[in-house]
Amino acid sequence: MAARLTDKQKKEIIADYVECGSYNATAKKNGVSVNTVKKIVNENADIAQKCKQKKEQNTAEILDYLDSRKEKAKDVLDALNGTAAEVWEESEVEEDGDYGSD
Image 1 (cartoon, rainbow, N blue to C red):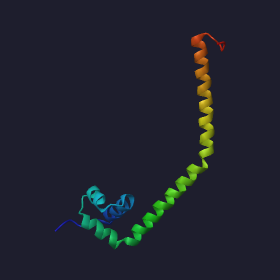
Image 2 (image 1 turned 45 degrees about the vertical axis):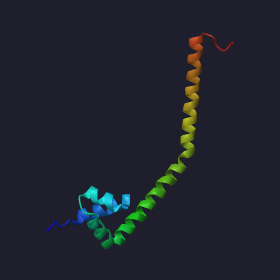
Image 3 (image 1 turned 30 degrees about the vertical axis):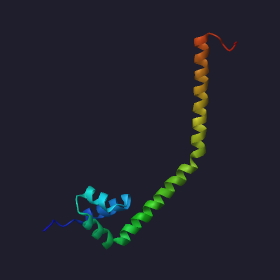
């Protein structure tokens, strides 16, 4: 008879299944059979559904946060690009000794 899984192991299997959505991948990761994963997920369908909803909520919150920071990131990149362009122009002037008279 196979060793019984602890509650912690079952929760990890559920979390892994919610994360990857694959019985096979979850089984391989946890060293159990595909049938064991299916059985645990099906016996705990409510928990698996709650985990999936939480994952979707977290993803939406992260995307909202990133979207809220988009303008600030653009401003920083624009400032850095401006600084880089100035440094590049200064180094060309120093190399040419030409200071802009073509």
